[in-house]
Image (cartoon, rainbow, N blue to C red; front, top):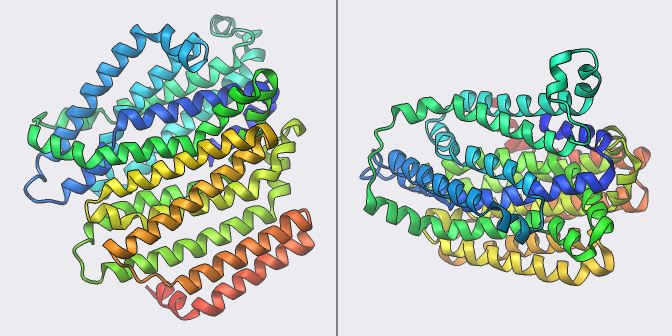
Length: 462
């Protein structure tokens, strides 16, 4: 949420949607290459850690692998920096920051995974929060206070540069990532650095479809901002990309919920895979995920006007608000997909994850190429929703054959339909009028309680 508040700072103090568009595009490239540098090793780590014969080798093997490939990437990226910058159409100076962030973030992938596997959520949260606080604080300092303070404090003149706001954002990120790596150094001091080649080959085989899935996800989630600039070209492309990225952030509540849920539940899925009641447990978890996600969808829609005025101070960005319900629903579909994807992870059929993600990426690219020239960012939002919705349905369809899970489709479908219907009425018909949207939200909560009262009481007792 602290990170989310940076939207307020960036949209207010950067020079309009064009500048914010540049920032959004750079971060889109960071996420794309983050996936490449992780190459599915994190998921492979969890999978093989729960197998007794590999338990003592997984941590060191995966860590050595990530460190080696990251160093190779760093050397090659700096050697070919000019060529890469030209290829992806970004300034070479910005690319320097991108490479540093990628290297630093890659080196903490396995330490964080190890922390999750050891069930140390407090330490995990503390390190993550320190990263966010440092990043956010430096953003605020550089963008809001540095200019004025440099006139009063002599040594601050050394670090103040005019028209350097975008660079300051990425410098803040580099510093935060460097501190995070320092905090995780004890992990690298404790491991034995033994490398099991046979285990590594199996982990790569298991993780390679995850890499493909990750790349497809990066295309689905972030490539539309890059395409907006490329296809609309010039200031128009950057402006629309910036406005789209800013309003897209209002869907971050759904993303935060889905991400936190996935981080906690993924190790649980693997550790309970051998339980005979696992399918029923997975079905119940998915139902509650849909319930909570549907509530979040309605809450954000209900208070979208407040969030818009509070978080995005510059009215230039508001023209893209029409995409908020579409992106919220798309992210809910993505969250459901991650829950449904348990079947191919616990049965070692991760290739299906790659196939499904490739289909999603192809839908994203095809629809963006078709819709952006006609509808700009609205076309991108529609493409995202259709891609994630298709992935969700495909995962459910194939899962029935290879790992049947007794999902309560009637209830899940009913809750989704009611939530989506109320959202459309609230946002598009009554323009998020509180007199309409709040009663609809309350009614939905009453419906959930009425149908889930017995189970909710049991959970609350525990």
